[in-house]
Amino acid sequence: MSTVNVGIAFAAGFASFISPCSLPLYPAYLSYITGISVNKLKVGTNRAIRTKTLSHTLFFILGFSAVFFALGYGSNVFVNVFRDNQDAIRQVSAIVIILMGLVLAGVFRPSLSATDRKPTAVMMSLNYSSPRELNLLVIKLYHLV
Image 1 (cartoon, rainbow, N blue to C red):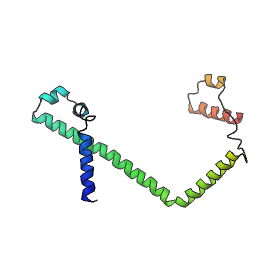
Image 2: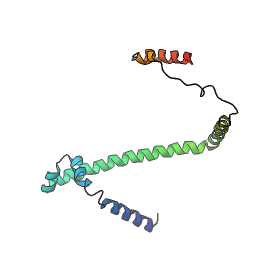
Image 3: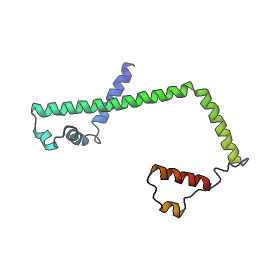
Image 4: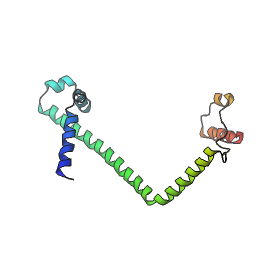
């Protein structure tokens, strides 16, 4: 990474930090992170309050960073799976697009998408609470179609 890019990124981060939209949020943020009221943060300048504020903020940032690193790693794995199967995905997508075009052109009409399925008032009034009852409901709805 070049020095210009790092400098621009630092300047943009600093500008967003001192922006009028963000400045009023910092006292509430510090109060939430430390568990100390804003008044105590303003008045108290002893070492214990500063240590508590710094340590809680540091662990908050570490936790936040861990979540975003995990999300970034997970998305990287997801992208690699797509990259490895790129040809197969492209072929399946082409088939799906052609089929959708044929449906739009009216060449054929799939029976699954041509029907409207709505639950009846009797089915809606029943209370299905157990997994077994839900399975029975699904079987009943399947046979109605």
